Length: 106
Image 1 (tube, helix red, strand yellow):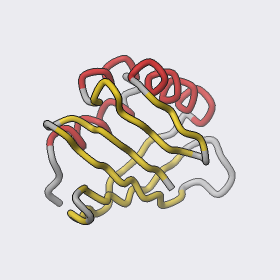
Image 2: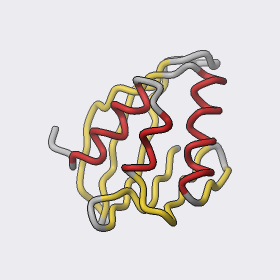
Image 3: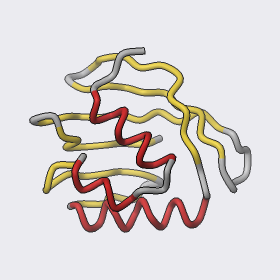
Image 4: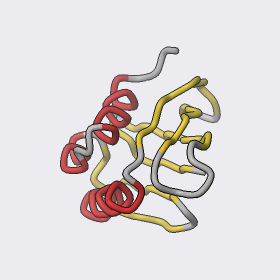
C-alpha cells in the first residue's frame, strides 16, 4: 500500500497518542469532519484528536488505500473502547502542499 508520507505520519501520531504532533501534518486552515462534527484549524484539530483518544483509546491500522477525487481514501481497522470494536472506517484525505487540508472520517 503506497500512501503519502504525511498520511503515514498521521496514523503513526494517532496510534502513539501524539496529538501535539498533528500541527506539523495539517494546514493552518485544515478541517476535520468526524462523528458529524466539524473541527476547523490546528488548535481545534489537536483538541479533537486528544479528546477522541481519551474517550476511545483507539488505534487505527490502515488496510488499503487508493487515490481518488483529488485525494486519498484509506480504509482502516479501528480498535478501541466503543461498541462494535473493531470497526472499519474510511478516511478521506485531501492534501495541499504536502499537508492535510481536509480529513473526513466515516
